Image (cartoon, rainbow, N blue to C red):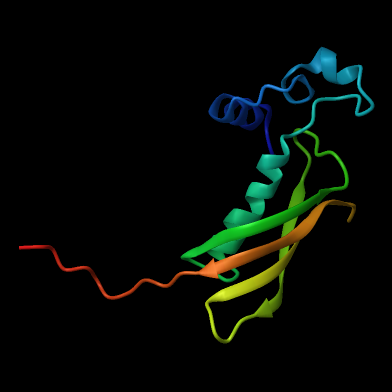
Length: 128
């Protein structure tokens, strides 16, 4: 769930001050009828899930494709899921399907990501 403070912080950090995200009067006059969360916040759920759970720590996103299927409102519960579609035996690459849904099951964002699974090597010795 993203708060108004999360949306404002994202706007400050990125410079994305599109009024659909930060101006309630403007947003009310649009087809959405309300302020919506930046898509980057929603896709960030996948970065967190991929780095923490599947494939796990050290994983970095190399390529992403997204289909935004619906808006996310401030305060709306959103869940993110990742499913492994392909794992390469010859390289540390995994292709995953990503899906974010509202609590009623409505998918608001889906796509695929190519993930590089970086594992730590032996500790680097200091140069003497």
